[in-house]
Amino acid sequence: MSAHQQTAASPFIRACRREPVPHTPVWFMRQAGRSLPEYLKVREGIPMLESCTRPELIAEITMQPVRRHGVDAAIYFSDIVVPLKAIGLDLDIKPGVGPVVADPIRTRADLDRLRPLEPDDVPYVTEAVGLLTGQLGATPLIGFAGAPFTLASYLVEGGPSRNHERTKAMMYGEPELWRDLLDRLADITITFLKVQIEAGASAVQLFDSWVGALAPADYRTHVMPASAKVFDAVAGYGVPRIHFGVGTGELLGLMGEAGADVVGVDWRVPLDEAARRVGPGKALQGNLDPSVLFAPTAAVEAKADEVLAAAAASGTGHIFNLGHGVLPTTDPDTLTRLVDYVHGA
Ligand code: CP3
Picture 1 (cartoon, protein in one colour):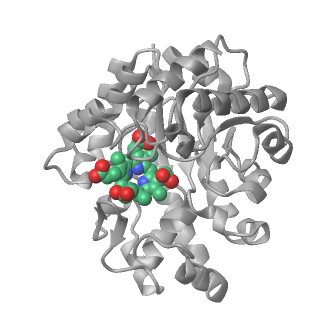
Picture 2 (spheres, rainbow, N blue to C red; picture 1 turned 60 degrees about the vertical axis):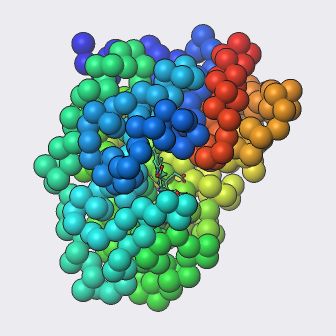
């Protein structure tokens, strides 16, 4: 039986398809990583991007939160900049900072450095996903990639950015260069997702973390075509496609329209209101504020109840998650208790 068949009856996949579930499935963005002592231990002395090229290590880190918390899905351990590194861009992930690009992409000549990604550039992905689907059995593996806008922001700014000013300067000032940049990034993202799906990933999530910086009209004109191209290109596999961004309250309808089966929502919009904005035919993922996990247990559970009640009122499929990634100093026991609480609710 293929990995896709083996996971089809799982609560996570059923919720993505808006089918009835025995309990609300739950996983956490950034569930693998610095909140876990066992992660820090296996990563000791290995730079982040190097760890993303070692299949056994990738499989171990991906499995850690599944074993510890009993979450309903694993997310493949990697980073959104891994495919960019794989085509030869000089970039690194600086601890406490994020991705840093030595030579930012700012001119048409710079585009030449963004060559297409070939499956052979990332053999470790195929190998690691193969190891993982064997270990996970009926638990789905979520593959992921960065969306064209969020990748472009890192490449154009040269690193993390609060205001994305150089990115927007290109978008508004050189719309054709911007379009070609996003199109190249869409193609790289498509190959990266296809490699993961063909190796056995049961669902994919497109992270457009920083797209909430845009107004709807600019999203529609300058970003949506490239993201829609990505969703279109993987539609034929039939695996659920999740679309996530932060601060996207005003973009939720368009992000659904771009082609996702599931729209990820941050904590700023209750899920019943999100369902109205997204429209019918899509499941929702979210949306507990990750900072809530620093409050006492009773408060965490009260806030989880609010999420579950809004999800029930939305009338659509729901995958419980945080509204953004697990913060590094989160107590892992809080996450384990929350999984049990959501499963028992
Ligand atoms: O558990 C998982 O979710 C899977 C692993 C994962 C990582 N990055 C590992 C990682 C995923 C899904 C990502 C996606 C990612 N990477 C996003 C989109 C999700 C989001 O949070 O919005 C973005 C914007 C990035 C870029 C990036 N990489 C940032 C901002 C950082 C944090 C820098 C820091 O140290 O504060 C990274 C590094 C990174 N990616 C770490 C991990 C576990 C930490 C590095 C380390 O442990 O040394």
